[in-house]
Length: 175
Image 1 (cartoon, helix red, strand yellow):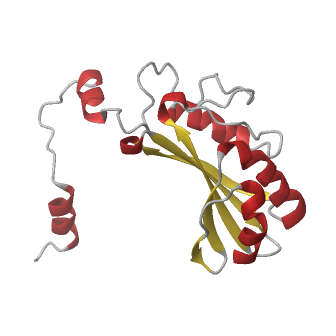
Image 2 (image 1 turned 180 degrees about the horizontal axis):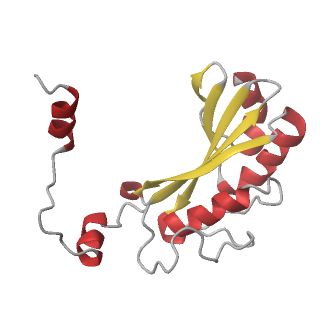
């Protein structure tokens, strides 16, 4: 895949080639180059399967990372394309017209991270979190402990265990 990266690097302004195994690599691409790169990978290089579209919240850098995992089944190779978005203006470009399954991933990312994909089907409809009005829960600035304390009443008799010690006692009761 290194040769594919070299071939596409200049035209699509690709970042450094980062191999993970012989048939898996990652590369960063500017948002404005993503669509043309996806089309070329699909139509000319055999990457016909969108495996997944996911996000990572890099709160310290003020960025979201979208990762598009593309697979070439015939060539047994997978390429991860990373696109960095400004957290304050979290808007990605829809690719549902290229891969219809992308619409589902985009709806999830809108609801769970607050990343918008204008033009994606049903992206503004509730998907998983019916009636949710708080900050999207996968954002790292969402305080899950505060949300739980605010939303759920304490139950008498409830005991909390440190997971490490609890699992150690369950796995090794004699030790």
